[in-house]
Image (cartoon, rainbow, N blue to C red; front, side):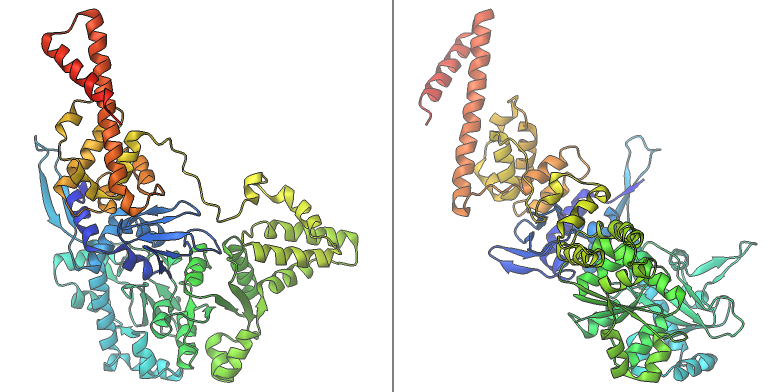
Length: 596
């Protein structure tokens, strides 16, 4: 079994800045000591997501999401714990050490082997992309170049998207890239090999125009390949899912778009790689595409993080409208107020690539901008199924629309849809729609009516020990105020063990921050309580913290003395005290009588 050493994780947290990690993914602004922005993990209008540079932690007062940079990557980029650590290590060019425990050795000795699978996969995929690009200038790629020229792509666009060509040979790419045993293993892990029924392996991509797929950091994580052979059964093939590639979480062209437009005014979602590239060739350089899969909730979140305006562009045939309806159903629960969504349907027989070459940029963009709003498309699709001239038709419209509207959490969107439904049904009062929605609302309780940004109350009784532990986690430098831990080690008091342990950690690492302390307790039973104390809003001013900690510490020592006094009095009733114990009891009584 392999694991990452705890010391490495703590040192890694010391090297990174949670503000940098988060600000590269969402918009945050400094306000006071901390940074604030809209939470990426739930819908909200007012920023309740805070990032503390001092603690190296983030916390959302709206939904309670919080943690270190590692936790953020796990939740935002959908990475596992080791993958998040590898991602952070890769940013700093650090190899992640793994400890492999051998069950055969008596002392369970460990052997450290350096590896970083994600980093190594990024490296080999980068080599592949470069190789494919160089192959595009070889005589063997003549047919591929003819195809790209025919599609109107110039050298600038080809280079921007790093388009290349995979040689039409069973193993030439493998032989060129995979020189060592490690590279051969990585080549296979990257999904670049396939096996036949006899177990023989060969290159997945052969004789195809290659489209590298990049993540939000620009790493090449997969490829899409377009055949140039008329008799090929598969027009497009994609990389399989790997340790670094999950197609439901990626959009082709998003990285390239953000390189040109840091904050794009809008994004248009099309179907394929060539649609994205062809539109870019005509100056519509804000197109993205799902990777051979239907639009997912994660795709929607990616889009909303990047822009406030999203246009879905579909073919105008029956299949295109079905795909648009599926996208709408995914959109409804993820809608965010302030975002604008449109659906544009192209003339039958045309796709974005062919139509933009016919119409040109200006006319195509006019078509995009004149698309149907989400509510227009929703009701257009429903109204063709009913006859509003009859009571039965209105009842059917109600039964079709209500299950869709109830999914919308964004208040303004929901209100707009309810008002439109009320107009179609002839209702003057929107509360009539609210009554009709009740049977469809699974929550249907008082809590559903609470404001979305109401801050959760952390239910926790503040004992002396919890105050000390909470302040120590948030302000590790307070450990200097507790130079003597010997007197604490003999005490039988709930939480004293963890307090002493935290003091030792802080003494051993004078510059430790909150996130590093919490990393020490990952997967330990106490982790949840410590995380709660780490985000406890104590309301003390910064210049009061040390005094409050000292006073609370004195209260702890007084509790310790009182506990010892009770023990000595109880013992005296049973077996009588020794002379030394009597002297100790007298001293304790004197000290406690003088306490503030």
